[in-house]
Length: 183
Image 1 (cartoon, rainbow, N blue to C red):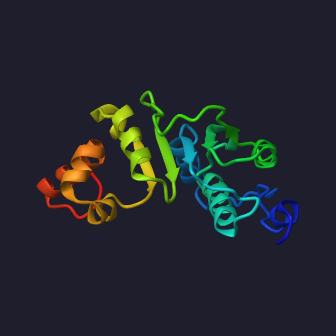
Image 2 (image 1 turned 30 degrees about the vertical axis):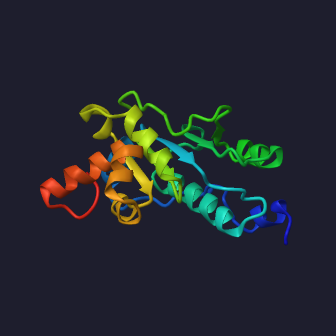
């Protein structure tokens, strides 16, 4: 297996030195206004020093931040599996590494927030929803992660409602509206 430094060299994650100009400068300005005030929270990316899938997820996260023009220091990241080398790499990349395990209970305080939670456990999603369960907060968040419909399909309804009531509530809302996924 290649060392992490070699793997990161091949990712080419540095921002472009020559940003592409939008044909309509107002369009570019509007895009900046829409995304520059976002923050991002990333949970459970995995041990990217030893796992190719986790490295791919990290690369996607960095490209995603760049595409949406979210400054890297506005991205808060945590995985209880990170070791000291991985934390150092994340800090060097400009991401903000959370020092404590929030267990998914990150309140957004009405700040537009994108949660990048690829393959996280249902309890983490439930905690996140619980800590932001208001119309104001829910309307300002986006989750990139597992499908709640998929979670519902894997658990008995009574288990979902007992152990993960906020995930269950999202599914009840979408069923009552006739929607297939999400809120």
